[in-house]
Image 1 (cartoon, rainbow, N blue to C red):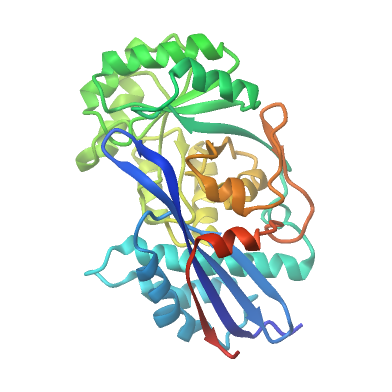
Image 2: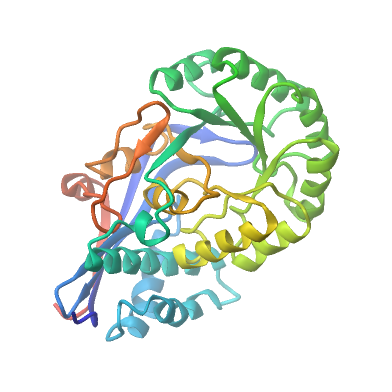
Length: 375
């Protein structure tokens, strides 16, 4: 089989949301991504999408074709570690938002993994370890200013058979947010798993206050509880003084950053994002380190890749979905998205990622398409 890379295609997709979604200190009005395809001399094609940037699509696409494609055209697509290394200089520009280069690298990395698994006719969850094919799913919700009440939202998630939810806090006082959380817990019941996510919205003292108020309310985890400037020490203090499981990792750029979270005793769960950090190759390094520190793995959003990564390892936990209105790409771009049943999705044995992308949906929301290499 000739794995020589001959052609690289990208398509930018940007979908407007029906309303603006607000967390503790951010808002989101669109859902965006880049679809990448890699072609080889032997006729193999890999296809994936990565990243959920509300902006920066043109910059990421420019990095892919202007910096990474020239380095990878003519390379062996099955030499994934080598290709990852050749793409890495895209992250070295200190005058550019480093996340742009990381998403560009991730777009290639995931696509190459998809191509390689297709060539072996195995699904990625099995190639990466094959621990399970069925994985529990929690929804991300509880946004401020939602058009649904907390009761209405929880009842919808129960009806749709989600295993639980990740509830947004950090934009109000700990006491007010705890009241909102307790309402969600009362509606969901004890078997409905509820994590909270402050998106770095609290001081350590405020996060500890929140933790103590909800101490007896079956909290799954407390995600990014502390403001960014000294969050590693802050999360360590919240974890011990608040007696709560702490989650972080999505804001880290590298495996080394996640290592430091583990080494400092700051986290119980690591929700490193493979699309924001250079790809599954980097994420799997973090997952391997986590076994040494007794840290469980999660993944920030991106269910199209997170499902395979979390299913592949023994310490993978919950897959995260948004409501269809918050992530129309996952719910509409993937034509064969598995249905939820008893709080889980079942992955198939289809090779690679196994997703069928809806061409009509792509055409409707495509901003541009671009090709590098032979026509």
